[in-house]
Length: 493
Image (cartoon, rainbow, N blue to C red; front, side, top):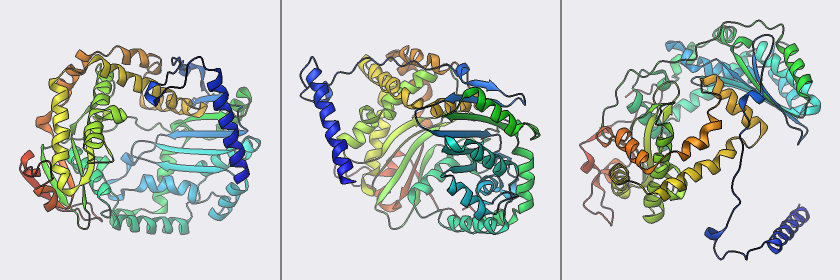
């Protein structure tokens, strides 16, 4: 291994030296002085990959002969949103046990052995608003891998022993919900934004878990796991026409059931602005989230909002919150902001950081100041240009492989995004001006509606006393409402 690494390193050094020798310009004195060729990346259109089988199933397909591999991913119209209220967790448990519970012809152990023999990976799962399944293996084993995946999806065994073990694992996970401040913060901020009753805040409990039976999983499977509820993305070392024939055959005699809804209820809840603190013992750092309700995807201001939030806290070390809180003040390692543009219900605007308990108030003040600053002061053209460049140069990562391209387009179709969105993406970003940034900051950033949540040593966070602002307390942002930890089993107070 050492010899291999040494050879690789030597080759790399020679290649770099050769490149420098051919360069017309001397090596820059600093990395910031490096010059790069102009990025001229062209995004292939969705129509280049889209096919429809005779069954009506949409397939995104692309040959990829670089390696002798095969990848097939399926989006499934199954969702945790469809769980009965007294059996929360049914969808996710069904998604897990599709793979882990064996097939009609194979015990779970036999299925594991077959997958291992093929050096393959088969995965299944169901989240809040969609499910997924996939297989990856060497292209020489395409037929065997495809057959195995179809059997997993079409003929699940839902083995009783594996089902019982899955329940036991989940019960242990339920008990550990309050173990870390990040879990507590993530859950509580979601409750403060969307309320207790929205399905996105439904949590499995020992009661709902014990109520789920094998027959419930079979019924859920019959209703939602079928070709009429699937969209396929497939790439690898194969002939396109031949692969389409294989897919036609694989799904031909599997009846397509009724397509499930692709819209979901919005939260019937208005966030209540305020300052909230949750006490957690034995931690010397606090986690803080600052935010309010965001918007839906597809607004005419979508790109101006993206640039605005990039400048504020989402474009790495150049963004203002990261530069101020992390780089300048050294108060947090992980900090930034996101402006959620939701698909089915409004997303959330959120800025965050983790810092020592006594510096949380000071770091919060810095974040709030940056929010006010971007509303009041027009950003420079250089700020806009740098942020647009950040997003433009990050774009190829979304399309870095054939499967990445296919998954982007299949996800877009599944969620109802215009298939031409990415073709005009760069052009739309480059249209954003400093005036646009200030306009959307003034329109969509709402300091008077902020929810400020801190999780950690409540007394130390509220007291403050950081060296640079000894008199700054957390309750200077408003009257603090202390929230007790939720019961990990019920997620109620």
